[in-house]
Image (cartoon, rainbow, N blue to C red; front, side):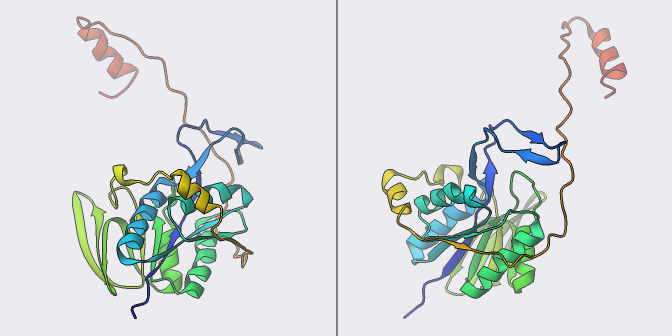
Length: 252
């Protein structure tokens, strides 16, 4: 009997892009007040592809997150989308190395053949976690993955490169950095009422961390400078436009 493929999908708990971002404590910490959180979009593309493997190849799909209790609604949404079970490592996501180290321990113990992590999270844009996971557990790795097919123990993937794409063949086990293109946006799964009800009954295991010391810490954040006022120039005022572009905007 062929054993079902085990897939681990990493889920980041990130602010919705429509949320207003503020900082506190002398701009050293992110202010969570009034912020709506969602599944990191790059992770959601990966989760949707994992659901395809579950449907077509009877894969087992687990999701994992490093974070406090406040991240559990995001994990429950992943369960409502169709994941079989969830794991929350009970510590704040301090940096890419500590997050990857915690996930690597679970991935190795669980003997997952495929690990899917978004190429980067949209809050810190570090882009480190999937690559570090692959290095720590000695798995093959495909970054910026925009296509993935698996036939028994063989994977064929495409990754985005400047000006095109690269086709890669690899044996399992494998880590991929998922992103838009792995599935189409129209194929993203919106949980229905049945999925939401089932998610309440699915396992969400909380595991204490191994407490890897972070390699980096964020000291201070800065918002972009406010946009300047818009100056309107009439279509007949060509000389004035050139003067503004040269002396104020300094682009010519």
